[in-house]
Image 1: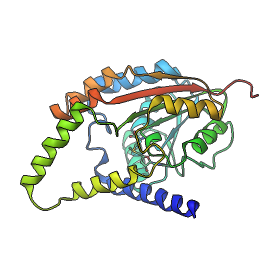
Image 2 (image 1 turned 60 degrees about the horizontal axis):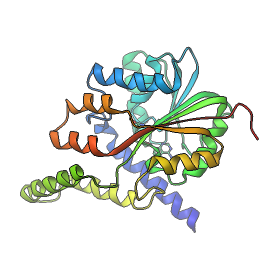
Image 3 (image 1 turned 30 degrees about the vertical axis):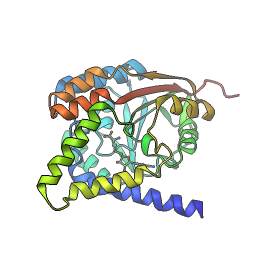
Image 4 (image 1 turned 120 degrees about the vertical axis):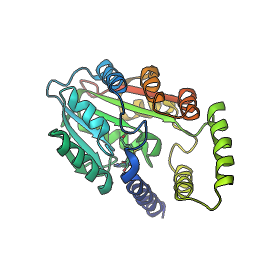
Length: 264
Ligand SMILES: C[S@@+](CC[C@H](N)C(=O)[O-])C[C@H]1O[C@@H](n2cnc3c(N)ncnc32)[C@H](O)[C@@H]1O
């Protein structure tokens, strides 16, 4: 019964993202709109994973391939995996357009079907908050990494309201009250809220809780890095003031953890 319910939720999450694929890259924070932001992302990746030098990287829940391309820029041999065909189609189109030899795979980040110990690094942005079973996912990611390999998670708590998100919500409610009948954006927000209420981190993905689960799965020394200011400042130049303030006040972070050289 539980398994069936979980299966339905996974389908719902996939369909939700597929419905957002067409416009995903229009948003700041998804696609990158200036070199300052690109350089800030590169610095974050280099800080935790070092340069690629041909090492194999897996970008889990790659969406339209934004992070896959950042990794490719740094010399990794990149595979991007996502379970949404619509997202992958856009990722593939962008890779063709940019002439980058990224391999894209359709699959579930919790059960990838990839070979054990086949990646040097795994990176994933904005996936963990929406996982149905993070413990199973982290066990799978540990299996995929070679001994000594590293995992980099970029995520955030998008549930806990900050003063800026409260202000933005009030302003948006006033704007909607003036605009009349329910628009498609509102329907997507309702779908998002409904999904969020049923995922593992329904109260918000706190980095400390993720680190606890990573340690339980067998990762060593998970560390939390909240130095994302340069990325957020670069994004703020292309956002409304309210959105930029919300972003600056949310708990957003990177987590880096390693697979031990020897198990046991
Ligand atoms: C917020 S988007 C992030 C996309 C990309 N990582 C980025 O930061 O631009 C979430 C993505 O996760 C994918 N996703 C969610 N759960 C997944 C799972 N279990 N397996 C594979 N993809 C998943 C969705 O299809 C969607 O493309």
